[in-house]
Image (cartoon, rainbow, N blue to C red):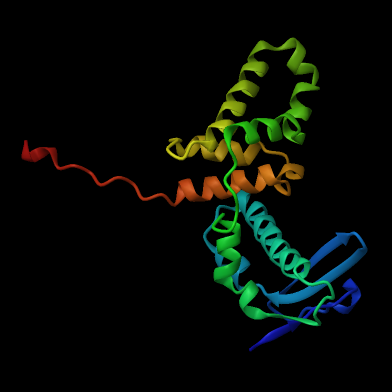
Length: 202
């Protein structure tokens, strides 16, 4: 079984070439865990991604790796000194990032999270929101795009998905809402297009 050392201070985690440092922090008691893992998944996911989405995808994978490490260590009363590499192999990271190991958010949960989001707060507290009806309409449209992600049969135009990712605040990407939004958009982008019907046969 191949393993990777779990460090309890970030200064001990010294990545080699083609490695990425993953840090998980805990509060009760306050402590830190860090590991150095291959960056293969990060490199593969961003290879063909549009430049404006690369940082978002990197953040999603970082969050997936942190979640895996956090969940693994929380299962021990006394932390182990290493972790099996199978926990953070590329397949495991992608499954975590795409939601295979994540709960679906209901419309009510999304609406509640949206009310507390940094994106919404920035917009509704701006001077434009009070004085500009067109701005308020744009905010309402964006909100509808976000909440509609809860529907498992919801359909979007590619431009709608681009808009969601382009306008969401970076602070929201590390939240449960942000993770769900990115996972849903990636799933919708990768959804097979329906086969065309040959109407020449009619």
